[in-house]
Figure 1 (cartoon, helix red, strand yellow):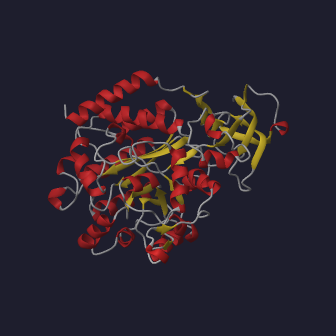
Figure 2 (tube, rainbow, N blue to C red):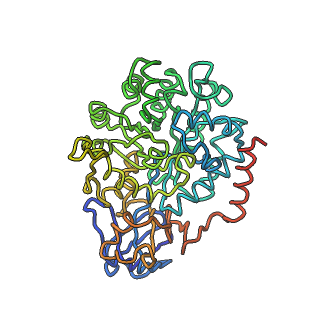
Figure 3 (cartoon, rainbow, N blue to C red):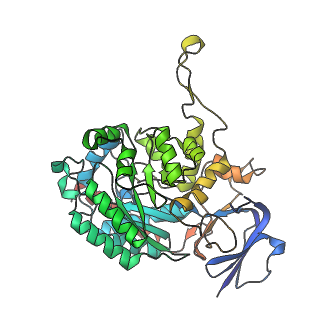
Length: 465
């Protein structure tokens, strides 16, 4: 098997059990697995390939736990809407999706993620008009070289049945379950170092029935795959659940068997402390999407309370129509900064009648935020083979050149710099032992013609042509 030596890194961030940060560090990799990690002088001096990364910081590849890649086709629409109005504005446009559009937008979104430092991504594809398939998304992920958790989403509760989406973008529940079983049997790889896994994910409480939630959970557990959905994202969703099911969102999904270590939910902005404690006790995970929550004015999620309760938490960029970008390293930065301005105490009754909220500058550190984007995401996806650089782990890593304007004046702490300073694209990205980005260039997709193709599909789709 081929060997690779990475040497002379300015700083190697391991995220191992000791959270070592190694000056002049390196790794020895055989095929797709890390064999040795340490100071360069302690490693083998020969290998089939040698990569000198002096002046670079090397980190574990980031893990994205929630996205909707097709939404890269519809950025900057419904700019001033809350979630429900945003969705009802975009559903008719998304009804124009084609299978080609799924394939092309997946390549676009994954390329964007790779440049941002992401080496493992999930994607929640829940809309399948015009014979769209998850297969085309899987094909795109395999071609570009991303470690991928393909999430078979679904919507079955249309407007005529009291749901939010138009009937024409929903599917028959019997077909959803049959196709879910097909996808698991055809694609899911449960083995260590797997490049492709399948997840089942009815979209949200306001777009699927309780029956589909129950049956999806039963099917997923029969095959040993994970479950995912949106939950407690907005106050409007909470009101919908109270009126429709007589329960708050968390109580509703708990009644359907949707808590446990094989489940993770996106957003979870509006949770009470007892609900947070339930997630902690049961090992139910959360995909935290700070930029999307800000863009849609959904609120500030209780990230510190989750962490205190032992809830598994990873980061997600969410769809490119509610984030308008897919830069996961920037999401690390946003997660840190947003917790620092979370409303820890009101100041409206302070002397002089000043309004606003008081923040806590030590609410979250750069290293804690970086852990969310690496080990946190790995835990949420149920993986113990990614998220850190240690012997026996997947050879998934990123490297950023510190000799650039963004990092001037901060090399005394380069680990904090990659979070505090303006997020940069990576110079190297390795996935499964393969260099997918080298010297800032993507090796697996020719970008210029692809961007032109993507923009043409986007134009036709938005115009309904």
